[in-house]
Amino acid sequence: MRAIRRGESGPAVAEIRSILVELELLAPESAPVVSAPAAGPFAASSPSAASSPAATSAASPSAASSPPASSLAAPSSAAPSASAAGLSAASPASSSLAAPFSSAPSSSATGPAASLDVFDEATERAVRAFQQSRGIGVDGIVGAETWQALDGARWKLGARTLFHSIPSALVGEDVHALQERLLEMGFDSGRADGIYGARTARAVAQFQREVGLTPDGSCGPQTLNALRRLGRKVVGGRPQWLREAEAFRQSGPNLIGKTIVIDPGHGGGDDLGVVVPDGPLRWTEADLVYDVATRLEGRLAAAGMRVHLTRGPSPAQPMTGAQRAELANGLGADLLISLHLDENRNPDAQGVATYHYGTGNGLTSTVGERLANLVQREIVVRTGMENCRIHAKTWELLRLTRMPAVRVDLGYLTSPTDRDRLVNPMFREQIVEAILAAVQRMYYPVENDVPTGSIDVRQLRMAIAARRG
Ligand SMILES: [Zn+2]
Image (cartoon, rainbow, N blue to C red; front, side):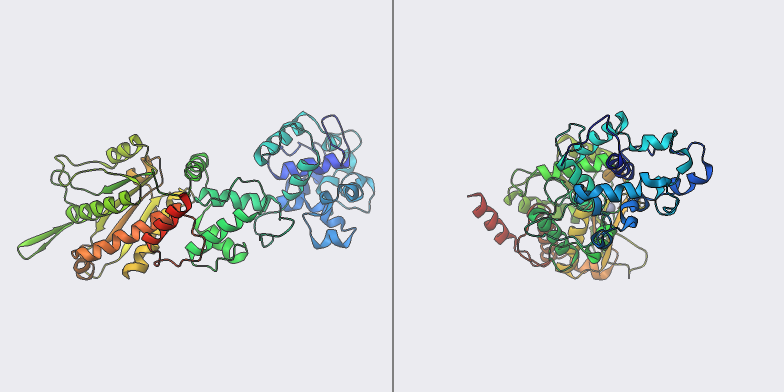
């Protein structure tokens, strides 16, 4: 196709601008300045409405069957539909209902409506921003590649089922959104390029396995629901989580050389955490979680990780969450797992719960959430403990750590059921095995369908060794 650049005007430019506005890369032109009634449909135009001109024109059956894709896919045929949508607005037949951009017939001659089809400086900036976001060469010119990517940008995540289509891959904004979400959650879907290739399908399958769906690698309504539930939309702190996810992705798919900090809770001075007397003995949270931490330290180190504990068996002073976080940050740790036990007046309260950073209303560390989800599932499946689920918290330790961090409450020391198990070293070994498997799952792309609770860590290590050698 012919490249479209700054200074040009016409229906194709109007089409490009409408997509850029929809992507919020271009400010909706302060278009109908005077025509008050016409402002209605334009101002109210939702993203889907903005792309509707091409769809509603429905000149060809194919345009009707694949709404958002239509006109730009075939640039040669784009002209008629685009002009029907945009600039033939003067004809009374095409009412303002049909097309937001045709809604200002009165002002079209002189007014701002004319600028809607001009490739101006702002449009070029928006094109550059779009190209950068898609990894396309940034030249501010809409050539074939940019044109195709812009067309794909009309697809909204959830509008269609995504799958790895061969030979021509599905391309679109929905694929891009899916890839970004997978990356945020720590799944390696490759570069977020908007193309649903084999790597994206593998990442989807891995996600599906972890949430208990059939790992078919395609993204339909069920998978989308699970993604929405787990990867809640991140607002505010988004760049931070993207960096976290990117660092995680770049760190590669194995444990060798990764740094993990294990944080046994409490343990300084008089801080013993939960204490439950048992005849002449007493069980303390500080000692039990320290024991789990040292067992875990041994297993993780054997798997090739650098492991640090935040404290020894009985430090002189209590440590705050901030101090523990600072220690982990100073080590440049890749992951942090904090270990605690819970307590409750009611001896019936029992079970395991895992916490990650999040405000509970959308702001969350998606990689942390994924680690929490894995730890929780592996422990519950392997030990049969009551599932008290994962929760978002803003506790100091979770908030101030710069790496994915979770805190696990490994049962209630005040529950006779949980206590009987926790005081048994064999049981604590089971917990260690579960956490180890969860950490493995964070890094190791399990190619085959391995259900939760059944990973044999030794086999995994052999597989990793085989790959490396
Ligand atoms: Zn505690």
